[in-house]
Length: 324
Image 1 (cartoon, one colour):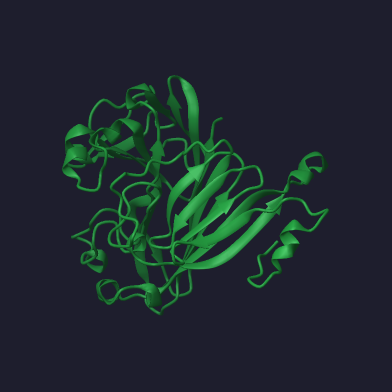
Image 2: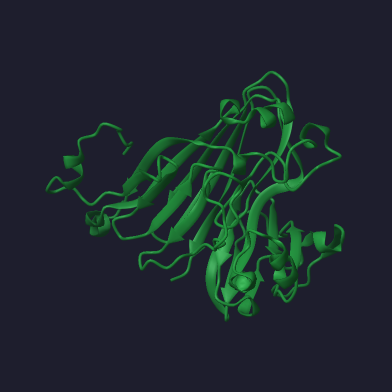
């Protein structure tokens, strides 16, 4: 059902109605949070539409957020799920985006909250449990941008970013539309920081026998071995998984599945961990040893450019499944 802003609050507790997902706007209208009847929750900053928390029904946090992350809109958030658009990293040789800061402006602009929608279980046995999921929609257009960003990237566009909280999953999807008369190009990425217990116990499958570029080694190209990926030093790689977007990338800890990621129209997967030296060098990365408890596995469209002509639309996203 679609939420109505002036819906009587009594409806939420009317006898006979199944429990509903609760959505709240807090922190002086700067954050949106949602909680399912079963206890799962998500919290999103309107600054960057950045997801800063995702918890299961027991209250266990799934995302890593730096203790020094700025949540006041003064700079992009270190942790959670920042959204990269319209450029991945920097692109000094790509004239249309050459003047933009690293990772573009989406993660450092204030988005509009467009509303929520919910879904109930389709099975009779569990329908009494109430809403199975809640979808939160956020919008960004040129009117939301700073004057500096508008000058650096003077194109007409519309973005709709949807965050769907399920009982065992988190889905993020982005719709990009060219609202102007001129064609333009973009890159995008969902920069997910996963919370783990021990990086030395992590292995990643789904990237075997796949081409990748290694940004630690000046962008050199390689093909990954046929074994699972483990990390023991600074890692910054862009993979194009051989199995395609619908083939799951699995994060295991101690041999047990922790997360599974399936992508839609996102051909690349970035794997990043700053390791000790780089973590110490980032003022907003805290604690310094936090690199042992985080891992970025990021779904994106970042090799080459997505081009949109006037009126054209692009859509992509990811579904993250969390193991109990």
